[in-house]
Length: 230
Length: 295
Ligand SMILES: Nc1ncnc2c1ncn2[C@@H]1O[C@H](COP(=O)(O)OP(=O)(O)OP(=O)(O)O)[C@@H](O)[C@H]1O
Ligand SMILES: [Mg+2]
Picture 1 (tube, each protein chain N blue to C red):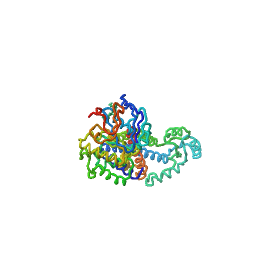
Picture 2 (cartoon, rainbow over the protein chains, first blue to last red; picture 1 turned 30 degrees about the horizontal axis):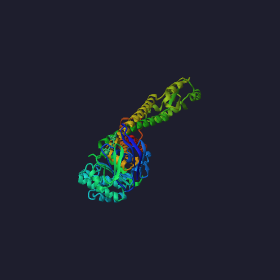
Picture 3 (cartoon, rainbow over the protein chains, first blue to last red; picture 1 turned 45 degrees about the vertical axis):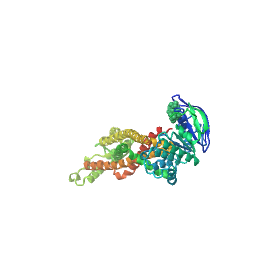
Picture 4 (tube, rainbow over the protein chains, first blue to last red; picture 1 turned 90 degrees about the vertical axis):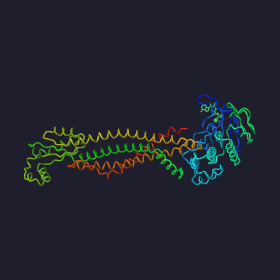
């Protein structure tokens, strides 16, 4: 469950990236976040993960009040989120398996849980046979699926993806989006930031359109024409 | 901390160490140098001190009584001598007794066997409280009417006092400097690892690892660097000490200097080295990650 109430955010250099946003996303929803470049989409993601703080308004995520969270609570809040980035951010020195292993250890999973969970998640993203490969030995689409597996491996309530298809060709993008839909159907809330209007239209999900730090449209079905670049 | 975490941190810490072979080598090297210099000066000071204690125990100054005094007159000086500050005790030795012990000491020297005791003077063997104030005490004793002469070992004692004091001062200063340098170098080694691992750290943070969890491998890395430095320094110190002790034994034919055997010293040396190594290592790693884990 995600709630934003009258949220404003200004960067240190004075850029007002978010200028009063109110929205809510319920458990189990699949939501696209779209809008032109520089409209504030990534800033919303950073607000959700606690990377930046709002200067006004309230943010609630999975039972945590992110807008006035204590230092000690931040790790606990982040354990309810799985984050996927455009540039994958895999550790190149580690194999696929090790990339998942270390994030499970990081939240205190036991070796037994790890041995059970990783094969399951790799199968889910269709990489059951690539456990011992290094990221550089994988295609872009495969690397992004490892990133999805990593976001999923700690069993978060919510998956947040910032332009996960940005570096992939249209066919891989479709595969990847379908994978996220499948994960959503297994019960995880999914929020995807994207530029790809064709994809957005294809899935007929809820679309929140941002422009200049405001929500300008929030509806099920498709994007609002003319506002999406790229 | 769960049991499986311990193994993980340990493994990560050790593999961090190997990923920067040269820096780790430098960090261990400087720690070894620090401990070795610290150890050497401390051991010199300990030995000098031990010698001083021996001298203080064994070395009495001898105050000779004027020839013209009868034994009764000579014995009367006892209370005056004991009243001198820094005098612990004064024991009267008549010329007969002096002759006896003289003969005992040189039983093979025919020449001395039939000497007249009268050529020796009555004397007092005086023990001092503090050897460092020997010269003042000697002057005070000499000023007493009836004391003709005083013999003492000022040069030897003074020499050792100087050695001990210099060793102590140099030791403290050097240890302070080297300690700071060692901590600094270990801190930089670990900063390099944190830089190497910044992506991993960013991801760990993103998935909700606590600062404590992120910190442990680096603390272990510092711990291992310090401990390894301590172990190497200990064995080098041992070898160095043994070599110096042998050198002293072959050159000091008079047996004036008694070197404390390493077997009596190894336990405290090992304990101090390990402790100091760990303080340097863990201190260095904490200073490396302090700033970096604030967010
Ligand atoms: N670290 C930063 N410091 C200062 N200003 C920033 C920073 N990051 C983003 N901005 C500014 O905040 C505004 C919103 O940026 P944001 O990254 O949220 O846009 P976006 O919608 O994700 O764009 P894109 O689609 O290009 O990724 C922009 O004007 C941007 O220049
Ligand atoms: Mg962005």
